[in-house]
Image (cartoon, rainbow, N blue to C red; front, side, top):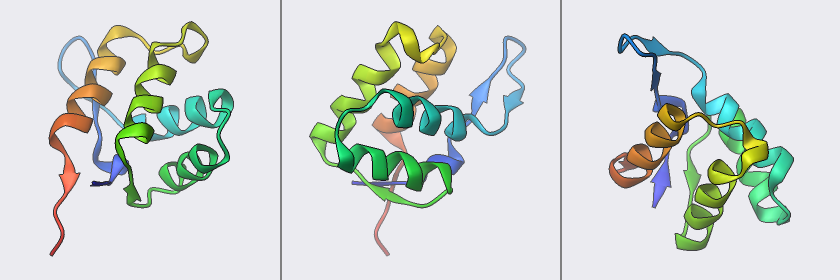
Amino acid sequence: MKYDFSKMIFRDIEDRPIEGGYKFLANALYNLVKDLDMLEIARSINKGEIVELDESAIEEIKVVIENQNSRFAAFMKKAVLDFLKTEGVKDE
């Protein structure tokens, strides 16, 4: 499925949007993945491009955000997981 992570929004405790969450995700992926394909996906996410993710890529993203070194707070993990479940780009 295709995803446009630039549309992913983190929200603070008062439910206000936090812009640029996709860049935080991209940097975490870039620094923590071991696979070259995922490295390219991280670069594309950082540029705000639409990326095609298969199930293994989605699982790798989940592993990264659960990694203690990623510094993902619970509200950020929830935003990424919810986005992956619901926000695929529809083919036109």
